[in-house]
Amino acid sequence: MPAGGAGTPGVNLPALRSHNAALVLDLLRTAGAAGISRLELAERTGLTPQAVSKITARLRADGLAAEAGRRASTGGKPRTVLRLVPEAGHAVGLHLDRDELTAVLCDLTGAVVAERRAPLDLGAGADAVVEGAAGEVEALLGGVSPLGVGVALPGPLDHTLGVLHRVTGFPEWDGFALRDALAGRLGLPVVVDKDTNAAALGVAVGAGSGSGPVGGGSFAYLHLGTGLGAGLVIGGTVHRGTRTGAGEFGHQVIQLDGPLCECGNRGCIEVLCLDAVGRGTLDEAARVLGAGAANLVGLLDIDLVLLGGRTVAAQEDVFVRGVGAVLGERARREGGGTVVPVGIAPGGARGVAEGAAQLLLAPLFGRGDG
Image (cartoon, rainbow, N blue to C red; front, side, top):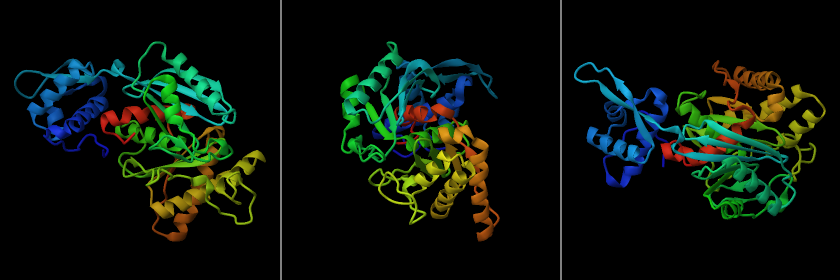
């Protein structure tokens, strides 16, 4: 389903009832506690007032919407305004990094209501990782019955099937059906995606609500932590590619005779960045990251570059300045005067986990394909 939101026209057909409900829910979400009237919902979705009344009646019956008071109108009686009920549903976001697990419980607005962290050894074997992750999720829930669990971890992987490929540094995961294994253990729906895609989705959804840095545009989220990858948002939607393998940014070769990477190639951006970080030369790491960012800007003509991950978080100014300098040099060489801005992605240390929760939440609001 294409991303929806304010200004997206609705269609009064029974077959698209869920699409129209998603449009209304998204407007309730973006309106916040102040709420929005049925008339405004009709105007902004293109639905008839009768269709909006039926949809909001169902949402209220399901506990997803409630009255938020009355608002003075320009004529006639005051209008009743409606709001989303955040606590009516929850989703778990689970970030499995190579050495750490972060789990968050989010309400319908995406706000974190509970959080857990624990050490993790991604090389400890599938059974141990699945059992440890399931235990943390169960401890997080505390009796709450969520919509499901979104899992984000390093790629490559098949998002559609929830099957891992040869995770860099952990080839033993190749072919493991993580989605089915965790769903069977928890008895809950599970969606699996790359950490970078989840974080990018979280940013895109935040942008749709007015809390993010972009709205409907194209940006790259570059994640430098224990590895390096990218999440790509094109036209407001996460771009995964035909085989859901897009964004393997860290393994583009920029130095043919460079150091050997764990992926088997030489001179990948990931190994060059991590080597520089290991030597404590963060300015060099930022320049290498900038070279990769410049490649993306040249290939995709994106509007914005956002940086995240624990390595970036330790020295945000160094990386923003270094990547920005490389992009600035590129713009000056090409002329035109337009420099693609560089910033820090919102969400901080739990941005990937929050984005993972959006794998379940965003489709409810027509804000992505989950």
